[in-house]
Length: 246
Image 1 (cartoon, rainbow, N blue to C red):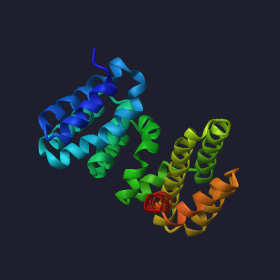
Image 2 (image 1 turned 45 degrees about the horizontal axis):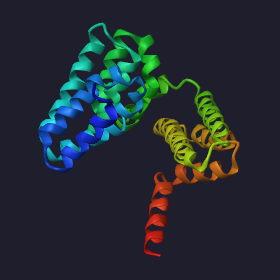
Image 3 (image 1 turned 135 degrees about the vertical axis):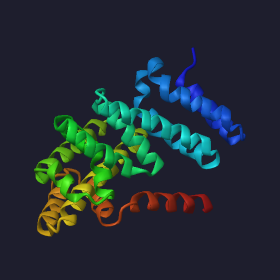
Image 4 (image 1 turned 45 degrees about the vertical axis):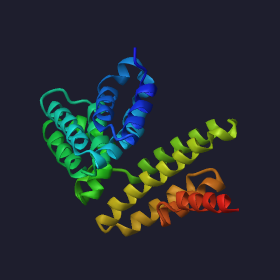
């Protein structure tokens, strides 16, 4: 039986060799069948695999059409009685990869009309699209307690950092991912508040987001990311380039 990691590498090799149809065939298999073989592939399926699919789509338009077709199929299922949080997660991830977040916004609006309880469960997944589409009123409705949201995010970060504290240096990328995701989620909260001209509340939430982080080192990184998104990775890339020239 095919293993997802092997198929993923094969798809990448096919793309780099210009065998685009073969690469698309493998990406379709990964998306539709990888979890049947390896449930732990769930995260990769909606992150790295989608990233490589977009690389393929940039060179081979049928790959973009195929991904859009999957998105449309799953969106229809969401609205025809088969809506789940995981299905919404899949659609939102595909739209983010395609840079078509307006489709996530439109789907969330319809979901809110037919199943407001499920929409509430999906709101965290929809928040990026709501902010990018500047639907701050709807986003605020699903953000009744900004402080509660910040504290929950901070607790998740602190717990994750504590769990990794005793791990080897190889865990550093995981910790960095936790930190950058925290900064991203906090920025969404601040964007909603600023979008509704709740500047005082936004300032308070930014202070809370920093105060709730227990590690001084992580707090400094987060403060920089809130002020200059992307600055951490940019600094790492610059350092790597400098080291390579040394």
